[in-house]
Image (tube, rainbow, N blue to C red):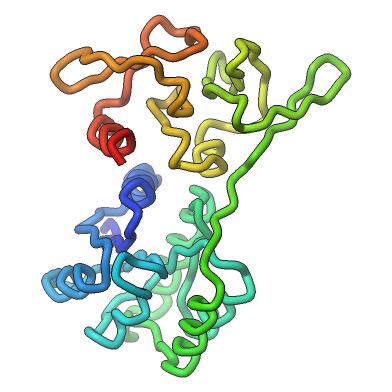
Length: 266
């Protein structure tokens, strides 16, 4: 039986990406709903019956810190926190018997967290599902979070090989990445391309999602490189990239069209 999840995240792109990663799991996770604030999360939890199997919970929400959720309602399922905070603040998560994922979320780490969750469920079928929260530790963690706002760290440059030499390419000079014949290429704004030692999935987690968008399985583009957007069919969009892409048509995946429009119109 597949796991049932709720996502509480105030960044729509991050929420959509997490939902996509959950669906793409070998054992897909069913996303029952999403919320972006404490108020919405309380309503979502209280209206979801039976309780979900797991709650993915961002720390800093649109209307405050997510820990307020535990003061307003009873959380009856295990929690996996998603956070961009530094390692020092994460000890409280461990003490409280909850898991956490650092943003941008890595697909392999997500898989490992779900594997751990399934193992805990299998080992304690008769035990209550909800983790034991320590109010004192949560209060301490809230204070730490307020004193140290999160700062997500994304790559600012890539090292590529040119013959026997190494070259540093700043992210500002990258138009897009594309995959071709089992290799991944970096395309610069000047029209040069280089092989990089990353998969497209890895790149999607390493690059700032405010600047780069995964158009489809083969293309991940910086917004400035998208020169034109054309209605291809009623449900598909075609993009025109500069420099010109190797493929004659670079289409936005059907399931990403609405997210892509939101990404452009932010």
